[in-house]
Each structure stands twice: as C-alpha cells, then as structure tokens.
Image (cartoon, rainbow, N blue to C red; front, side):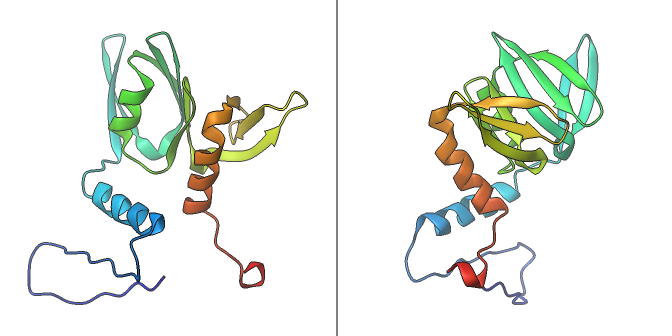
Amino acid sequence: MKVTFVPAHQPEISVQVQAETQTNAVNSLMDYIDQYQTRSDKLTIHENGRLHILDVSAIISVEVFDTQLTITTTEATYHVRGSLSKMLAQLQSPSFRAISQSAAINLHYLQSLSVTFSGTMTAELKNKTKLPVSRRYVAALRQQITHLFVKTHPLNK
C-alpha cells in the first residue's frame, strides 16, 4: 500500500482511495477512514449515580450478563446496565471485536488465542483474564487481528 500527502487549497480533508478493483480490503479501509472522523477517544458511563469518563484505549474487555455490562479497564472495573451491541456501537473502534454473544475485547490487549483440550478457543488478555471465544466468531476475530496487526513478511509470500 502506498500512502502520500497532496496539499490542497481547501479547509476540509479529502481522502481518495485508488485501487485496481474494489476488494474487501479496499472496503475495510474506506470503512476505517469513514469511522475515523466520528470516533471519540472518550466514553462516558453512569455507575451508581456517578459519571465516569473512560479512555477508550484503556478498555480491555466488555462482558454482559442479562442486562448488566461489566467494563474492565486498565484502572478499574465498572458495572452498568446496557447491551453489548449498543456498547460496541458507542465505541466505534476497529480495535474492539465481539468474541461471543456476551463478550468483546480490545485487540490491543489480546495476548494469545489457544485451543483447549475440549476444542474450544480461549482468548487470554494482558491482564491475565481468559475469555471463551465462540466458534462462530473465530473467523471474524482472526481476520480483524490480521487486518490490524499482521504484516506479510516478504519470505511468506
């Protein structure tokens, strides 16, 4: 991928993506750029009558049981009412990925993925938390990890 800067005489930033064909990778890039302008690096939550302002980058995981969300950050754990899908919509970050119907993780805190003896996959996070990964989420999780982190080494082509 080639990235260049071209000066323009307009106050608004304009991004143009050029490729031979419009592939899934191109669509992912355009979605990422589109989300960039609406994303916030802060999240406000209400817990026990208090307003907390969280750094999105400090959120390690979000789990839900019934209507109770547990938000684990590098500093503390918060319990609020809500749904996982609404929380992921609020976070608007490609760093967060659902790993089951009841949990999502910040991929920047993912330490490893392992398969247990029974064949289920487990995500181990940097805070030593282990969360189960549902089978139907594995493919999307691996794709997002590759998209965010893995660079193809010239010898692997």
